[in-house]
Image (cartoon, rainbow, N blue to C red):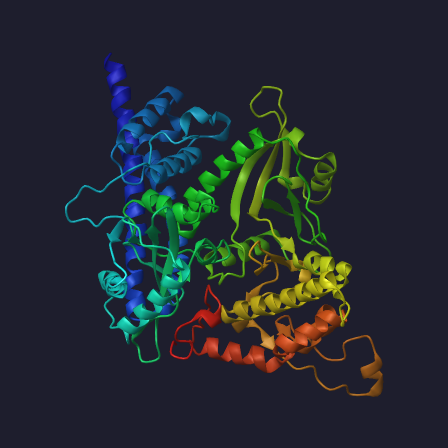
Length: 608
């Protein structure tokens, strides 16, 4: 009995140290998120961007910190497996009444897999499924704030209640015209309610945590009337005079999906009980997977955990096979997908053509840059996994052959569990949302008759409109990236995708760089007639040189595309456009990029 008591005491001490490590992580995470309010109030945009980048690294730092402590104090990696079983049981006990149990379970998994040698790795020692429910977790402390507040307006008091909602957010900067802004919000809400009678349960529920990103602050809530619920968000910005304004009202699921898009940076929001926020937001956006909501809240590791659980569940209930993704093959990434699953999987190839002067490390650094940068709705977020196993029989033989040809170091075929089932173990894989490649989107329109400058018939007219819409969105995407200090590098249509909401998003990151690092130049005049007629470049080109006027021949070969592009985005071929943005960025200016159309803004001329 005595050795068993010693073992139990050791197991509890390890579990407690691991829980202390998680609590420290979430305390620091939450503190940094809470500081976003002060940075917004003081218009510290560069500080906001810096904090957003640094917070992404918090989790891995705390995992390493906790792992080192467990090795130093308990020699955790040398403990037998029965001790680790007890550690997990004690840890489950510590999750009772915890306010972030799902995050603590993921932290346990991260630390455990880091400490235990992979040959000893067993599902018994990690949380494959949640051990503790996150339903109805409440903060019982008297001074704590609830997850959301409820308000009960009438037709006559709706504007007054909206004013109170904003005041309860406790922003320490005065509003320029709060009552007038709330009257505009009221008018929009009443319009969306149409002639609906206000029911007995008519109320507004608003999350108490404010959502901060870029230069904006968002109040997020829902309006409930009878059996209907209407999601909404109020963007709050600084105006030119340094006062606050409500810039628009986002209303309905589609607007919220755009606000919480996978192509936007993570929010800063102070949450005591994150699962309650996820549950509230999922009620507003039922089509959005929970993993993407956790990601949007800055809890990317929890998003990865949930994504992988959802993926395994999908594999068990599907039978199609992984295949090479449709579209033009890339030079540095091998892309494949599972047709029934709305994501694509990317492997970095082992070698590249001569024109691609890059390396695996450089490509990974580009993906990390995108992860840490403000993606302004135009760069897809990625999930990154290492040593992840898939059933070999779910892979098309041609895909396996392609991986073995172009990325052999990234694939291991083995019977890791000794059960005779061969696994395809991918050493390093990026996963992102599947989109329609923009070149395919445009080709479909060409094939339907959209390339005709004078289309006849409804189908041809719609196809022509699709081309124009795609080209407009393409140019808008590039301009949003420029505003975020990002030069895409390879601007070919195939490197952009169309989301289900019709937004164009960039997803090929191996050549991106900061606008401020580029040297934008005008093509020098030809020295001789022979130079002008020659197919060779007659002028020197440095590694950072960019010649915007040369984009045209690569992008605008189709007359319909050229017409739309020159009508809406001819400035992208002008060096002055690029140089102007570079100079303003170098001068410290932070551009506004909105997750809603400019035409919906209440004060388009007043904000910074």
